[in-house]
Figure 1: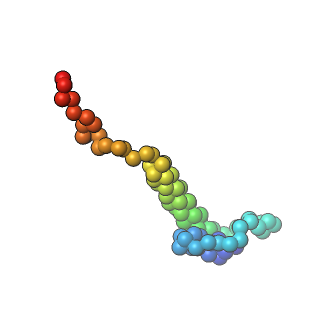
Figure 2: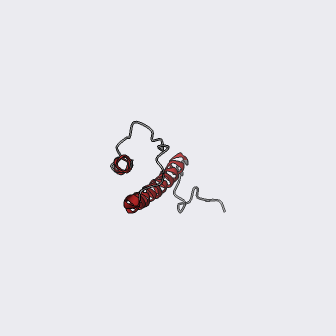
Figure 3: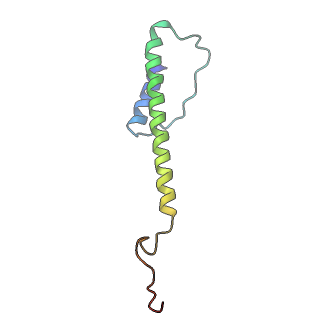
Length: 86
């Protein structure tokens, strides 16, 4: 099970697609003590990747919102007209 989770995480880090969805296995019982450190390291890596993905999504959302904003017709610093009468 840990091997499969590590393979999937590595694929996510490499931006490769994992075709099949992951379902948590049932009926395994508690995690054996020798695997505890490996599982905790895997969990920490998963959380790091999730945080990186969330930051990337936020950045892309900002970029998308900005791309939908109409461009300014004139630079904000330049006058739009010149008053020659006043």
